[in-house]
Length: 313
Image (spheres, rainbow, N blue to C red):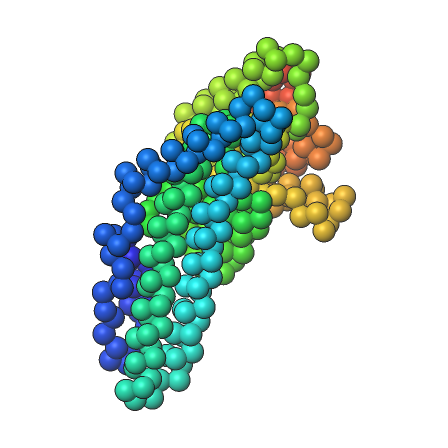
């Protein structure tokens, strides 16, 4: 469970330092069954308060915040781990072989190990809460401006922020932010359907299309715009249900009108196997044109309900 940090130290010159066992073991944290039962009980009691009341429309925002409590706690521990790791690098660079130096190095190593163990525990709690969120809302939970990764074990349905991914790929750092697999870009707008029945048909068409694409690409990584509404939301929910890793390229609002086109460029830079396109804006239309120019296969579902699939290279 605590191999990541120890492995990171293994290749360094530790000047005779002996890495002790992590200060925390699995028995020092809440067990998985206790986490599942407690969070499910709290969730059920909390959201029963909203049912059939004037606050029912706000329940999803509260649900998102509930999951985010654990995400933020994990982020704080991750920041503690980064700070301790930086201190270790400084100490290694200034190693003088003294007992004081060795003691300081051991102290920072223990601090880093403790932070990593707590981070992993909070990430596990977040994933339990995210599962409850998915069941309650039908949507995949994702943070607003960062990635949702799990360092303690491989999380097949991780949601990685696109800009963090590109930075990690450039710097070859933080393997948790570099999902393995074949990229498939999904794009669709926020268009509304005329009736509940048409909305259901539209959602089913998205899921059916992605299932077929996944059949051709078993190691698929779903790349999308991270929108919490419309087609992106439906695609993200599909990925969560299927255990598919997600790479979300949210708009960089500071770019203004260029933001959508920049996102197109970033997604196509991954050399995806397919671009799956449902109806959307002119930015989406441009994505299709550019994909075809790069000879990327486009699964074109831009009909009113996406009922007539066709592929073009």
